[in-house]
Length: 592
Image (cartoon, rainbow, N blue to C red):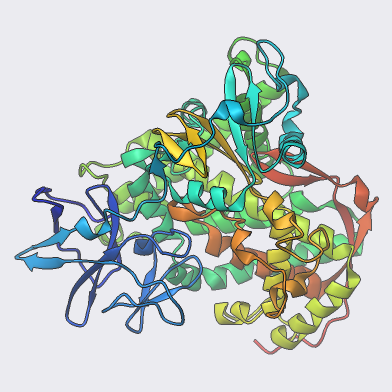
């Protein structure tokens, strides 16, 4: 985040210190997101959110005179704001330099709003919505099993429609599976919607205060640091490390194949994602792949289920009567805090002994320790620790679950595995994975497999929010502090939007002539300014590990496919997915 030295409100003008480098740089001007960059020998300022799905353009990159949106690679002429290859020109703001400062007039952006204030256009109120009939005091809480909340919400959507209401305790929740409403709502953060208000205090209680739970002014600088750590240039430099971790994974599974062991798929893949995350975020080689016993993910696996139970509790019973599972979760959190505290202390000591490293942080933890917030102050220890834990938990679980679901679907579809291997054998030449990150980008069918898995098994199937002011969404009036739930999966299972929506068909992402393929409603990472910051890393890990597994091994399911169940604990995990692996006769390994 570019830091303002002062703001002078003359109409809609602000002054900021001229940033270093060409950009792009993210700026907030009178409540509006602006992207500032240098092009054609001068400064340019444009609307800060991509017209496609509202992503922050300040998180993008400059490439050959074009501003490239990081999320879906929309490209805009840096000098004019015109989109390359389609409609969607960026709205420009007048900008001029005055000594060491830039003066930006954001008046042109005043009309760029997503959600409108409540007005006469509203034709319905929450009371007009259908939904399950509540019981006194508890509402419909008695119908909800925590691990299957998403399935229950989706079943109600089939019964009551794309917009309904449900009461949990004394709280009414509006639930939407309307893709147009969902997109508008997600794009309207953080100004009009925030996360469920129970999240911030709960995350603070467990010591996980970070970019996921942050709101308002606290969120933006933390988001900038997370995005910088996960920038494409950093992933490119990190790729050789990712390859080494994939090679370790291959050797582990070769031993499992030789021993005839049964593997719990998600546990195995978590080793890979933990090793990737700790190396990228903390520059620490934990190497759980080659370890056994009490490894760190044994502690991590308690965190998300505990969060889910506590978020849905009508009263905070775990504080007064902690059951064994809550005591295990609290003990795991204490151990994780201690482990991360050691990483933070070691990094601080290293930075203190190397001023040059402090000026050019090489990983997320170094960036957190050397950064300053919008008031020019260092981040507090609890924010640093909370972000480190957030990065670890999010990086370990979400990607591992998507890869595990990929294994589940591929085992059931040998014809897809055959097509996948034809691509892998042609590209890899016997390597464990593509030699470089450009080779990963050429794995079109592998990418299609990943998209199809995320369509059928979105890792975040439900997103809980709250309105910050009186709004109208669609034709529905929403008062301030209304609880709102976005369901991600029903739109992509709508036969009016996807052909044969319940079938696993990766080819649908490669066929450009399908009559029914509405990719716009496919939002596995969310959308808008708070789209998942780890999107690029997740897609990279998925393709690399899928390539490693299916180029090197035959996978045999242990148990029945129908025995694998979806478990919702903030993210969507497969329970009961086990395999035995066998070495595959692969093409000769390419010369290194």
